[in-house]
Length: 640
Image (cartoon, rainbow, N blue to C red; front, side):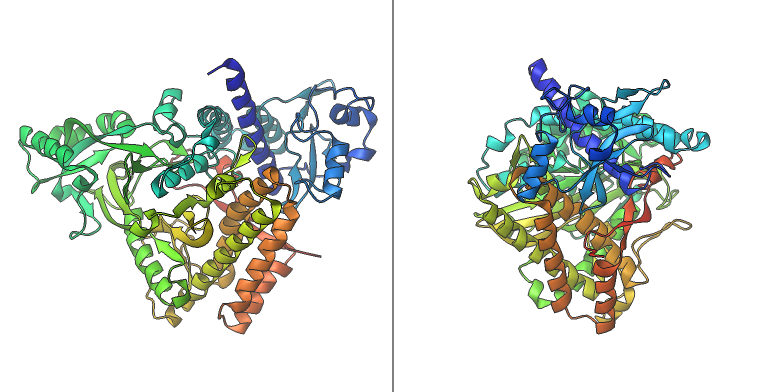
C-alpha cells in the first residue's frame, strides 16, 4: 500500500477518534473547564477567528487546515447548508478558550459536540497556541488541565491515554485494509453477514474513543486476527480432563462439530497418538494468540500434571468477527465459535469465564420465555442458541477466580432461516459506520438511494426496534441492544426483524417478570460488586434503552446516515422520538408506569448517561470486569 494511502488512513483514524474523544470529554463534563463557558466564534477576538476561519480574504487559517480539514468546507458554507436543512451540522459555532482551543456546535445527542475535523489547539507557556495533531496529545492536554496531580498520577490515566494511541493505530490499519470494501458485492446471506461484521469492526463500540484498542496485539496480530482483514485463522487444540470441565448441556453439540469429517478424523488420530480417549479428555479449541500468550506460559502446572495436554495439530479454519472473540467459519455455517482472547479492551480482559456462560444460559431461557409472552413478536425476534459451551473449571477453583477464565469455548448457533435466499443479517453497529464517503445501506439495497428512501428505511428500523424492545420491556427484560449484539434482519431489502446474541447480560425487572410467571433467573453475581442485571425500578431498566439502545446504537446510525446522505440529523432524531412514543403508546403497560416512562424519557431536562471515560481513568489496573459508571447529561428529546 502506498505511503499516501497509509497517511490518508491514519488521518481518517485520527479524525474519527478525535471526535469520539472530545465528545466523551464534553458528555462527561471534563470539558468545558469550570468557570469557562463556550463563547460564540463570531464574537470572539479576531486572532481566534483567524485561527479557524482564515484572514477573511480567502487565505487559509493559521493551522493550514480548514474548518473541517477539507471535509465540510468553510464555516459560511456550512451554515448555509444548515439553513437549507441539508447538512449534518446545525446552528452557531462556539469556542472553548481556556487552556485548549476548539470549536463546538449544538447537537441533539449530547447538547454540545465537537465540530468534526476542526483544528484543536493547546495553550503554550508563553500564552501562544500550538496545534494539537493527534487524539492522544489532545487527551493528555485535557486531562492534565482537568485532573488534580493526584488524579492524573492514577494508573488508569496512563492506560487510558495509551489506549487512545493504540486505538488510533489499530483503526488506521483497519481502514487501510477495507478500502474498496464498499464495491465488493456479497453473493449470499452468509457473505452479507461477514461483510457486515467487517464494517461493524471499524466502529466497535460507537462513541468510545478507546474501543478499537486491543492492548496486547502487535501490528502483525491485528493483521492476522482482526475482522477487517478476513484472514483464515487456524485453530489450535488442547485436550482437557473431563473432571476439570464444566459444560452448558450434556445432550448438545461437541467441540468436534466445528470440524468436517476429515479434520475430525485427524484430531481423533492425534488424541490416539497421545494415548488419550474421548471418555477421559475433551478436545478444546484454542485461539492461536491465546495458546502462545496465555495457555503455554500460564498453564504450566496443568500441562505438567496432565490435566491439559497440548495437541500438536492445527485444525479448523475460522475468521474473526467484529467482537474478536466470536469467530465465523470460512465456509457458510450457522455455527459460530466463541473463544477467549485475553487482550485488554475497554479496561477488561476478553476472556470467557464460566460464570458468564452460566448467566448466558439463564439469560437465554428467560429471554425465550419473554418473547413467548407476546405473540406479535413471532417472526420479528430471532435469538442465537448459546447453551453449547465448555469451560475449564477444576474443583480447586471457583466461578470468580481469574485463572480458569482463559480457557473455554462456546458454539453459538444462528437460526438457519436467516441464511436463506433474500435474507441479510447485519450488526446494527455496521449502520453506524461511514466508509470512504459511502454507507452500507446503499450496498444492502443495491442502488444509489434518495433521501426519501433513506428516511423510509430509518423510519421502519426505529419503529421495529422500539416496538420489539418495549414489548420485551413490558414483560420485564431488556436484552443486549447495543449495535454489536443486536442485528437487523432484512428480507428482500425490507426491515423484517431483530436478532439478539450474547445473552449473559439480559437485564430484568422482577415485578414485571412475576406478572408473566417468569422466575428469577438466578444470575451469579460476584459478592461485593455492583450488578446491572437486576433493576428494582422501571427507571433503572429503561436506562439501558436510553443509553445502549438510543444514545449508542441508534445515535451512531443517525450520525452516519446524515454524514453520507443529505438528511439533517435533527430529522432523524424526530423520527426516533416519534417511534419511541408510538411504542410506549401501544405497548400494554400499567398507566402509572406509562406516565412515569413518558416523563423520564421525554419530559425530563436530563437523562442518566453511561460514563465511558471517567471509570477508565479511575480503574485500578486490574483487568477484571469492564469499568462502568452512570452520570447525568443531555436529554435529546427535551423541548424545554
